[in-house]
Structure formats: structure tokens, C-alpha cells
Length: 274
Image 1: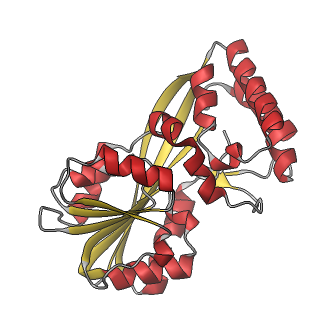
Image 2: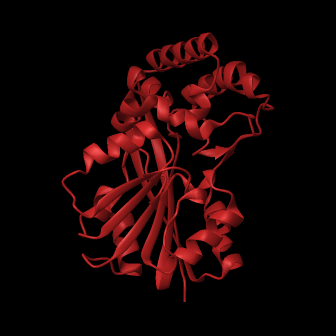
């Protein structure tokens, strides 16, 4: 599995961030939420209740939104995609404290020194580092927290034959399309989580922490191809090439038992404005 959320790839010179908005319903159906223990860790770090003000950066279809909304807080979602913004408004319309700003976080007009929590789930990598962290710091109240977390999927290690077969297919289609040298993909590690967790210290944050959480998901061949169809770097591949690419992956899974196990690493980085 290869995507901009799970590993580092070369800049493909496309505006991948806007491509998500073309697959709203599929994204909402196929993308997973996050472990309950991850939210427990956030709420242990910063208390959130009905009087709290919160911003979510890059909400997508709201996979990470509901557990925070359930605290009763006032939550502003900043979402670049117009279709996603509409979906969010419909999905959480029963929560009076919820509202959506459509636009880039870098450009959103938000009051400074006003928020108890700002969080971003598998989205903050779209924001330029210096602009993003500086703005988050300026928006938080003293004692407020920034929570950055993401899901980092990869094919389970218990199917080495399937992994090798899919790697060959990626070489033929994905790597060739993006001009990536075979064997240079980098999977997410704990060291990478430590590296991300240290970034806020450059922008005045303190009390830096990180945690890792794990789970496994099982997909049929068709479900897995649908999941791949929610990743911007996959959607951006030219249609006939993408169709052949996905068909080969589906066939490979069918030839190896008809199911594929994905191992998720969820990393959470926490930092505080003091």
C-alpha cells in the first residue's frame, strides 16, 4: 500500500490536497476513524468540555470529529474541500456548537488566543510547517494544546508473497507514474513519530509528548481497491493507468486468498502553549 498518509513520496507536482474533494462519499465510507485510546490520551492531556473552544484542521468527512464533538465543546472545522464542507455540515447538524469554515487553514480568519484545543487528523502535512505551527500557537490560549495525529497503514507482514506481488505492481504503475526509484519507499517508524513530535518546540510549544496505537483491518479485494481510491496520490494517476493498476492489485489479492490484512500505526503528537 502506498499513499501520502503512509509514507514519504516525491512531490508529484499536482495539487493533491484538492483531489480528495472528488471522492467524498467513498472517502466517508472507506476511511477509518481512530482508536478510542487515542482520544483518551488527548483528553488526559487537555480537559475539554461544553465551555471549550476547539478547531479541527482539515476535517475531511469527519472521521476524527465526532469523539471531540461529544464533549459538548464548540468546534470549528476548517476544511478546504467544498464538497467535504457540505458533508460535514449535514453530518453534524444536530450539534449546535459545530460550524464549518471552507478554505485553507493558512487563510482562515480565526481569533487569536481563543482556543483550548486545535487538532488535525492525517491532514496537517498539507499545511506548510512554519505557517501552520506559528498560526496554531497564535490561536491557542495559554495552556491550550495542539494534537496532531495520523493513521499510517501498511500491508500486514504475515503475507510476504502478497506483499512482493503488490510491490511489483506498484513498481510497474505507481512508481513509474511518479518517477520513484524502486525500493526507496519509507514506511512509518517510531523514530518518525519522535521527529514529528519535536517540531512544535521550534515554534514555542512545550510539554511535548507522543504516543503510538495499533490495530489491524481486513478487506476483500474489492474493498481494498475502493480504499485505494480514496488516496489523493492514487486518484491523481491518469485514469486508464489507474484502472489497470487497481485491476492488477485486485487480481493479486484474489490469487492470494481473496482478503488482505492492513496493519495500522496511529501516531499522536501533543504539544502545549504555556
